[in-house]
Length: 439
Image 1 (cartoon, rainbow, N blue to C red):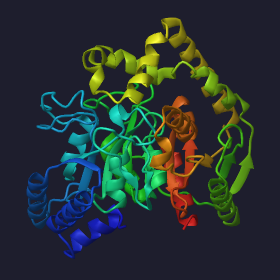
Image 2 (image 1 turned 120 degrees about the vertical axis):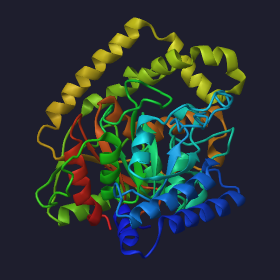
Image 3 (image 1 turned 90 degrees about the vertical axis):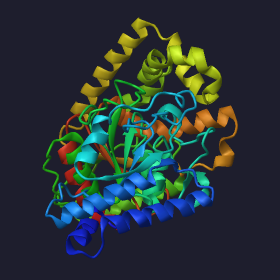
């Protein structure tokens, strides 16, 4: 797949046009949907073509406002797009009034000249790492239709992996950008929470939510982050030689699939051979996370606050598995919530101490291969698998960190380059150094 920079070069040189790129994306979408694919919930073909033609005219007049100008982008069904209903992958919001204005992130993409193709499928209300959706169908991993694409930004990831968009706008509360990036062979960037505005997006957890891109390279994510956040980070790739890349086996390696472990060790060997320092470290406090979050954590508490009236009125329109997770928040007291805040502060302090000399923290993005859809049909299997898929990525959300998932070259397996709060620039620099070593 081509990167944003490559496609922008083709546009500038006249080798292609925005209209052609959008026509190609729309043709890919039509073919995919005809075959039963569930990545897109809504495609705004005529508006996209009009925007592409306007972009081509502006370019001929010397006006290309950003590197994403004229390129087709998809939007997760969580974000307001003016004139469209924001249903968050659910039937419970399907009869809502259309949005009067774009979400901030969408408005920034539009102002940068992106061509908005349509809304992509997702786990209902973003409350799953698997991407299952009983209302609209489940997007499948591009390398194996029997497996999930990962959630909650499932449709967005598939739209990029199958050439139906150049990039997608997603959200990440416990891994919802990085998990589908890993499962679909993409690069996904979860910034520090609140660096990208979430105004105009349906919330899941006001504490943990973040918004960011899935695309075909680290540089693509850097370009999109500048647009989405409005901040120009120094994200030039670092020199790999001498980088201190920390690795712990605590917690994030429990129950790891042998194929994932082998891909991770192979990646470490390649990085070490190119001069990076692989530094083992201990982080036993991570083992406390299941107990700390045993009541559902911030996500259940904050989701219950947002959903309680809607759930009371329209319970029959919710995915029962999502409704069960939301209702866990009803049982949390104010004291429980404050205890969560205190636990988080303590673990963040421990992480800052243990990683103070690290350039980045590496781990498998997900400890297992993308699960098969047929293996997730029981309630017990769904909850156990969902917890395992979310486990590694959610560590970074709990610590209010940032992270990039890179494809390892092995289908469905990602390498996570992680950092603590506010280290976004450094993590993008390190990810840019690691990326070519992974091939």
